[in-house]
Length: 499
Image (cartoon, rainbow, N blue to C red; front, top):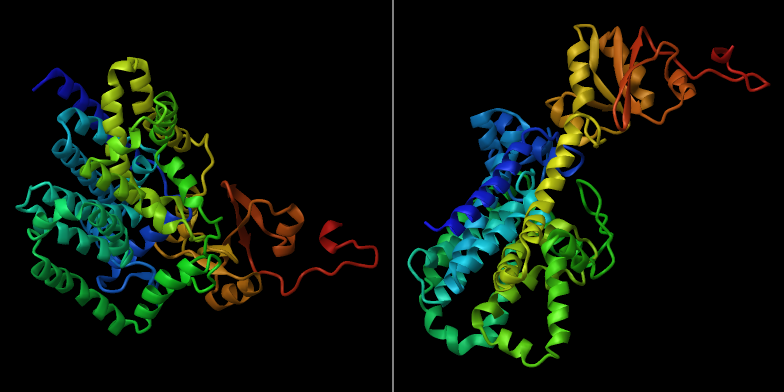
């Protein structure tokens, strides 16, 4: 084994291990992670492996269950923790790193494969999603496996890749739905239109009929069972999530949040964020090369390589599809990054002799160092984050038999729902007294916005005392009964409590 290989492997392992360690310490911050974590926790708690539940009695129709299956399975093995819920995404990223290495080695060389896998692992979105509770990691794993398998089969490497092509489709369909077919269909169809003569013989190697049947047998039963158990799922998920959401940037039919109304074409800006720092550096280098060489055959020479064409189309597919969509997130870029990384890895290996060692170390370490520093600052409390973990832990340490459940006034954050094991309550201000009277609580613990003034706290209850606060909320303890009504000001605007 060469010294170069040893150093590359050591650096790659260090990057992946740093994310592995960091994901155990950083608390879930609203909204995405604790929302999906709570769905997985409910799945593990109830043993319902068919319908993910948004909360007891409310089915979650927004996503298929593959990521929740993996996370709930991790809970069964490791218990409920940030680490166990994030661990499946880390494994999915590890698999994608290997797929990137395998394809780059097949198309070019070991050196290109080393650079490609390192570039992919240190891109901003890759590094973040590797330790995050989200569905996009599993979608990206499915699309990457299908597209890598297709490319390897087209280069003459058959065997297991003929079947892994369809396994990738299964993963994508059970992770995110029909979107997976679109994201693999765009590059495959466009590439075939440009490379039909080179591909026609190898296309026959794929077991189309048996593979399609296998995909249907593995995917369709869950979709059918989900519709039978909670009728309306297929209409909401297929029509709503995949058609109405795409066509209407402000789609009001979202049952679990709100649509994201972005400017059309924003997905390209998201690519710059997701691929940071490599995408920016590569684009600048490409622009300089373009003008210095005066375009002398640069494009034609590059695109004449069928493998390069396929990688470019695979990298562009998410942006091409979402360009006209206003309802987008930066995580939609993740399926592009494995192929973007190989293209950048090819460029990086060719430019390696021109780079200083400091430049190489800086680019590789930038995202891992920045995110690790952020996690460290958050753990020691120097960086405020939107999580209710400290407040929940404080409440759990002081409550007794006479205490109410933890109450959030009018708005219950997802992180509070998760860290309280689903026991925190969302209660309207007008319902506090009836809740207390009905349950004979002697002490109410109520979380109200941190920005509330002393007058607002007093209006809630004269006995309310603040016992702690976090980034967004202050925790009040109220002894005794609440008043029936708010105090009435006299003619001079003075309230009894102000005297």
